[in-house]
Length: 57
Image (cartoon, rainbow, N blue to C red):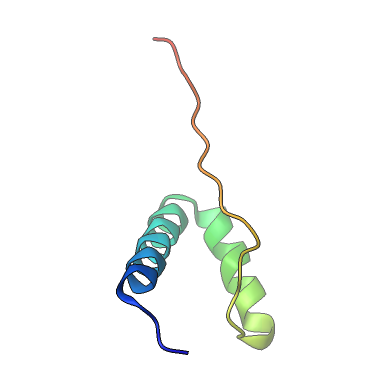
């Protein structure tokens, strides 16, 4: 299946979000690598959420 420009853009955005998250969260990175090491298949998401938290200083 050929990817269109917008699909490629979104895939790149999500890939960069994941890379940043894994770089900042070593435990998540370890789990991610463990899951991928089992059968090295592409991981697909059934949903994606953005969560924010309001902190008062």
